[in-house]
Image (cartoon, rainbow, N blue to C red; front, side, top):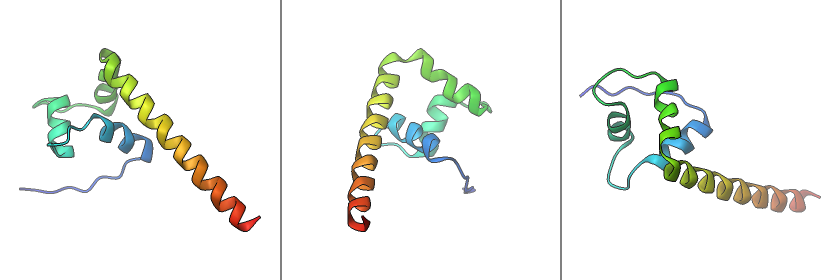
Amino acid sequence: MVVKTITIKQDAYDILSSMKRPDESFSDLIMRVGGDRKVTAKELFGRLNDSGSELKKMRLRLKEQREKMDKEMEERYNVFA
């Protein structure tokens, strides 16, 4: 098996992570979403429009992560203020 390392932005990772099932790897997710053909990133993320429930879950998770980051940043600011 060939292994490739890719670099993606945190937002892209968060999207993929929210789509990933507990029992699958990121490779499995990409194959499930993209199938056996080569797929562009635009096509991959464009499929989110077809799934309202997946999009809602993703938005909720991102909102929770932003709130957590805001709280952590405020705590750090207070330490140095």
